[in-house]
Length: 122
Length: 107
Image (cartoon, rainbow over all chains, first blue to last red; front, side, top):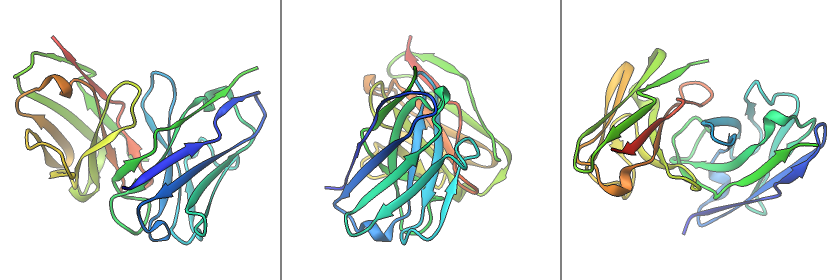
């Protein structure tokens, strides 16, 4: 069974840092670009960042550029996002998402994790 | 950035009725790069439609997608109780963006 399992969320003060992880199983992880998508409480979906299968290419939403860093360890089938200089508006459920087809992250997402909540508050 | 605008914001219908949800793009996009998702409270989104009209694995045939250019539609032919949820469209011509969602509620 194809699965994604996020971890690492929690409460952090404004200006703080947090690293989220997403453990993948059931598919050839290194063949797929991966993305992080977030959802603020009561709001819609926002794509945050994407990374190629090799890890050599990345992209970010303007709202997180320069503060978040996406990475992956294909030997551990794990996706990460390092979040620095966190703001109240970064408060959200963070999902990792797998695209339907191998290749870039510009695809429909057919598998989503259950999400991990990040709360930025003093 | 390509902006997707969904309408209506909320749609109130009875089970058994037909639902028509709209997604309009701020510029023309290839239908290959348009998807629809369903999200229920406390759950992750679920892919319904990709390529504007192809159903994802396991999606019932009462769900259908259509459209081209800037105007896309998700149709649910006969609403079942489990279909009441929030629906999002997504484009991925450029960095992915989502519409703001349509809430489908029981009348």
